[in-house]
Length: 312
Image 1 (cartoon, rainbow, N blue to C red):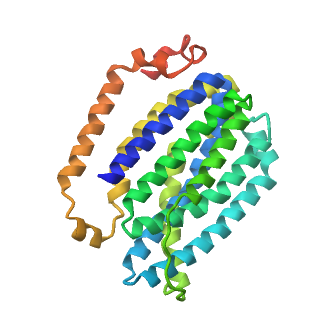
Image 2: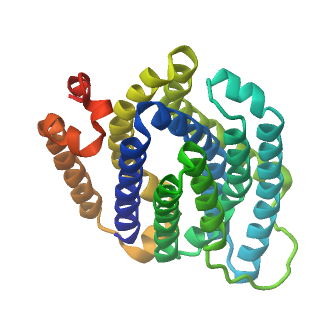
Image 3: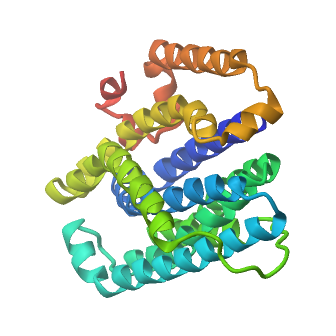
């Protein structure tokens, strides 16, 4: 229930973030900010892979020292991967900006800083998830969304526009990384074999990469093939669908990968998941029935004018 509540607050915060950015930047700026953030979302396939695998293997250890050893191994690997991803984005920032029709290559450079922190955030969240620190995990998710929202709002008002939004996203990744509460014990050698850990990570990367590509590659392609204004309109419309997808996937994402001992300890009733699914279904029906009436509240007139029917 704690994870569901934290996920709900995170979804609401991210929705409010998109509304603020859309209203203040307009279609063009919103489209540019969204496509850069989408690149970070695509990279989250690696973050989620580290999180899920580390939580699973940490939970399998019988001692606190063993859990800490597994975490340290995944944390070092994630930092190496994050630094590599950040350097690749930094080196190819001009080519990426040209492909996405971005006005400033430094938008990708700011994203590279966020990516360097975002990948190693996975094992840190995986550790607290594997040690049943669900309250800390939920708080960390909310902290990330809150820093992104408040930082974007302040930097937009300060006149930094799209660059300020991307800087806020990078700051949110760093803030979430440092906000994870950890209590490590001992200094044991990693009990896992490299081949086994690599196979687990690789399987998770394939799964999440497919999920992220299916849900987000359209934003990238639209920004490449269409002008900025049209791409921004598409991003605003697609955002509603992404919110619905995130809401529907949260119960599965929170409980599907829980280790068997979690179910034995918590005796979590299946009625809780069914109740959450019913709430999501009602929210989806409410969104369909009120789509036209809430559009002016969600987006600036520059987005809604002559395009109101697209969201319904």
